[in-house]
Length: 415
Image (cartoon, rainbow, N blue to C red):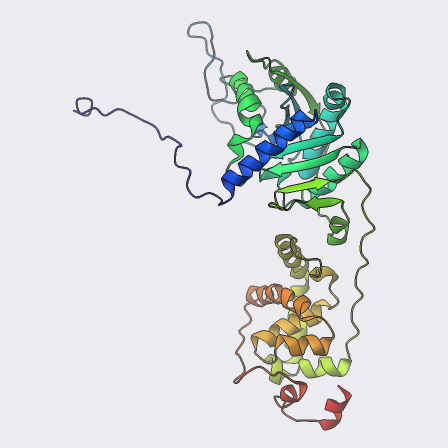
């Protein structure tokens, strides 16, 4: 009956794009114009990306290949992965001008360091031979993975490569969700995938040979090498070191478009020294009438929350790194962990305004406010119930003193 009504078994079709960035089309035009200008000037233009990670072994793979009748390749029924299971991480570089590809086949992790090392190997083995007169390099990449524009390790190692090679490197990232328009996807990776269909990848050598055998009617040639280097996860770049890199964001979407000059990094800005805070002031601010908890309870909260602070502070700073440099990283703030958590608690208690706390602690209001968010997260993490004080927050030291059980005029004069 369904056949008679015109029905048939069908899969899904990826046609609905969903929401997109408002500058999507404008950025596509920007990328195309930049690439055209580089090619007209006989400069390098490459498209880079990481192909999907593949597990080695006698494993089932999608697709079909020509075989003698009733003689399929026999593979394992169950393909569980273990910690020592060999893996390949192919990072590809596609030279748009010469229609040539190159794949660095890693065996460890897909990190920013691995991505830049892949580009470095391509330059040393193919790029500088094919383009001996090039002085500038344009890289088009997607907005995620090891070449994510928010990864500081990617930019750090890319700056080191620019200095080593002498190339001025310009990077154009495609907007999120649009990586399929990066030329490497439909000019190189799709053909490598076709060569892999229906056959298990049982060894590194087979992977290298299969990639190197990839050709097309339009003249595509692909090279491949094995990279057995180790690339550790979780490496970080300190904020002073990152800000010293020779990176110039562009006027149009500087988060996606930037240039790295082939010069040495600047000297990192000195870490601000911690402010010396009067013990009498600290004793007043930690009064149970203001904090809502005993001094011993607050000291215990500081002790158990300090290990969490660095992780929260780094994550918050990574999200806000594009702000002006007047913003200080909490790990290098002029306040210590004790007073950062104390000010967050006092703000949640509505004991004093941010302006008054900044004046008392001799820091800027902006620097103090940027750290409240992480302090509030620590309070929520340890489920600290905070009851706001009645009335408006104190705006002056005198108003704050009146909230204490006993008012000491001598101590007020000293503060």
